[in-house]
Length: 277
Image 1 (cartoon, rainbow, N blue to C red):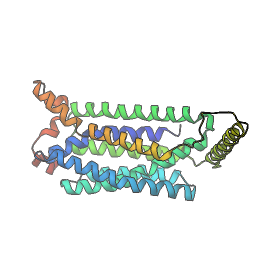
Image 2 (image 1 turned 120 degrees about the horizontal axis):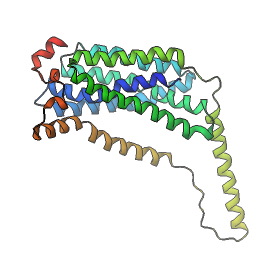
Image 3 (image 1 turned 45 degrees about the horizontal axis):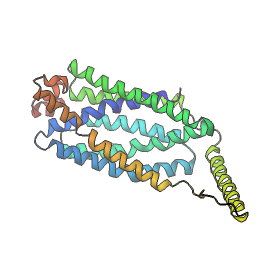
Image 4 (image 1 turned 180 degrees about the horizontal axis):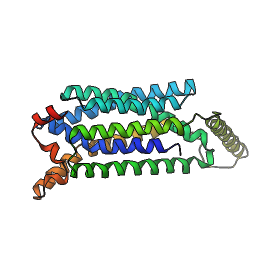
């Protein structure tokens, strides 16, 4: 049940992921892609040190719930402030500030999974979490289609994202709890050290007995793993960020109505946004 708040949080950002790019292009139609790139790059740059900070501080204090609540509440507040934003520069600043707090729930979430389940159940627990929250993300995307068809304005769409995060915050107050004991990861580290020592002794004994072996004594290369994740994230973000614009262009070229991709209210004149936002 503790995952339910994360479900609504992901629903909000599933809706926001598509809407935000379209919103930026609507505000700045001539340089929309440039500002989308600035927005994405700025948020990623601030997210990197912020992730290190929140991961360190949550493990240092061994309090995880408070940072999850902070992330959800801050996201709700910043998204509400977006509704008063008519400047692309201010929007980029607010989005970067929101990103700093948004990533605050990532490290504590991982700790909750790793400490509330035994090592043997980690894969299943993480898989269920990802499947459950990604379902929320997909529902958020579908919700974006629904609100576009019923004519939600930019203000109402951003307000809906804010409300979903507020729901996530309220649910997490009651459903999320810090683990009573934090020891599972320490046990895994001990297990890895013992296993590494055992394999070393085994290989050494074979060599001393004159038995040839092709086995090597290696530890997991966390740097290589992280580098691969960084490259994968870079590739997916470069593809996904301009995707709504690309789909919109294809839709227009095919003679289909733009409302199939962009809400009618998002396609009105920029002056209308100055009023509605």
